[in-house]
Amino acid sequence: MGATKTDAAQGLSASIEAPRHDAPTCPAAFTGIVASQTATRDATVVESVLPYLFVGNAEEGAAALEALRKMQAAECPTARARIVELAVQHATVVEHVTTTVRSLEQAACAERQVAQFLAEGSESSKADAIAVLMLQLRPDSPQSVREAVLKILAQLCQPGHGDSKFAAGPKPVVAELPAHLRVEASLMFDPMRYDLRGEATALLHRWGPEVGFGRFPEHSERRTCRLEDFRAKESVFSSFRYERRWRQCVEDSESFLTVYRELVEEVVCPHLMSELSPGGESGAEAEPSEDSSETFHYQYPPTLRLQPGPSAKSRRIHRDAEYGHQEGEVNFWLPLTDHVCTGTTLWVESEPGMGDFHPLLLNHGTIGRFHGTLCRHTVPPNVTDCTRVSIDFRVGVGRFFDPTWTLEGVDHVHTRRVCRIYRDGKNADRISHASCCFYICGCC
Image 1 (cartoon, rainbow, N blue to C red):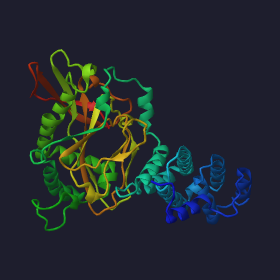
Image 2 (image 1 turned 90 degrees about the vertical axis):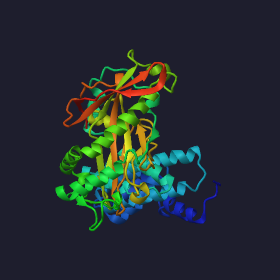
Image 3 (image 1 turned 180 degrees about the vertical axis):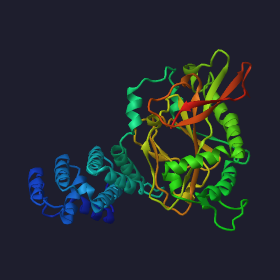
Image 4 (image 1 turned 60 degrees about the horizontal axis):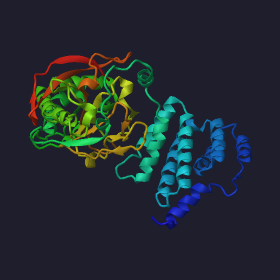
């Protein structure tokens, strides 16, 4: 892009970068003027101070933060909404200017200061701020806006209580998962052969009205209704009690589980086996075991998620290590609905701590693979009238995974199945399957 801003962008930039004609540029003078007005949380004063977080000057930003702190402005819903609005405007302006080292530094400074301001609030205020920010993560939002919002969220969202336990506690004594299996990828499957969308539709037709968490529109036939049209209660996404009841429905749906087992054992595990094969991407890093086989410990049943809309509810930014998952596990995410209809999808970062969150724009027939134990991920709110439905599960990979290890303090468990894949020494393409068995493993 050229170095000249559009007229609209120039006006917007001016309104942000010069919030008041009489604004002092000296931080000390600025703080002194505002401090005299901070006995009460005056909306006009708060409004005049907020734009100083975006001027890219650390000293003035720090002075503004101190003034806002004295006014406890982070507790004010109007101030939280306004700071998000300004962040979006600022990111929109940035998209229309030439990127320089200086502009990147200013943007990073502004993002840090916004996160600091929002973090000053109570836990409920921070939760509200996160919800408002998450609403900006629409697929049609400008990339610069999404990037700025996600950077603020990454600083604002604190790790869960299990994250520190995972970092400080004893780790499984296993080999290190090969680097290429930590890299995001995708794999295709035949959606007619493994019709999990159809199975989920049948499952919802049966259990939705019976259990009471939702139903399809009246007079809709099972053969013709769209999965996106299922009307679920918001609590099925946000209430742990409802999630437990929903999980039991999945466990009781044998037809759904049969298709899932076949998909994992015929597509996913062979895919992982090929990634571990000598001469493949893994090279000598993951040479096969002595009996030319690998054991895969996959989650059973999978997690079938419903995200109804319109709603402001979201999944917070997190990594699965805080729920007791091991580094020797690989995450798989399979959407069953159309992300164009639902307007939301899973967002992940490419490497641990990178913060470069991006949406997985996949549809039924494609499985996303990522290292969710260490790579953070999130789901923004669904603001449409459609329901988002997806499946996610994890696979513990052979000698890189310890099925007997659990993270101290983890309260919930998944069952897992074991799938052993054999490789014909004469023909590495010939794959066969051993029988599967059950055991319990500590998981979220």
